[in-house]
Image (cartoon, rainbow, N blue to C red):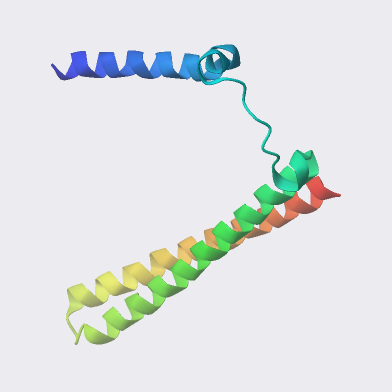
Length: 120
């Protein structure tokens, strides 16, 4: 039964993707797609700067969440009252969050480098 359902679901998704990929079929049913503008009037440079701003915001938010997780893990470490398993969990959490924070900082450096290359 599940394979039959999965097969039907897969076929429906293929049909939907083929339909969405064909603008003429989309326009026949829903009408022409209106021009709603975009970032800075839809220019290529405006689109790039908009995507780069979004990436910067997301990476900054992820760094903030990482710092919050470090604080929470530090509180868990203090509150563990000497229980080895709880201390180990808190230490592992801190280690993994620091590794994640380093990855986020590297990603921010890559995004800023690409931004300098693309926007100049």
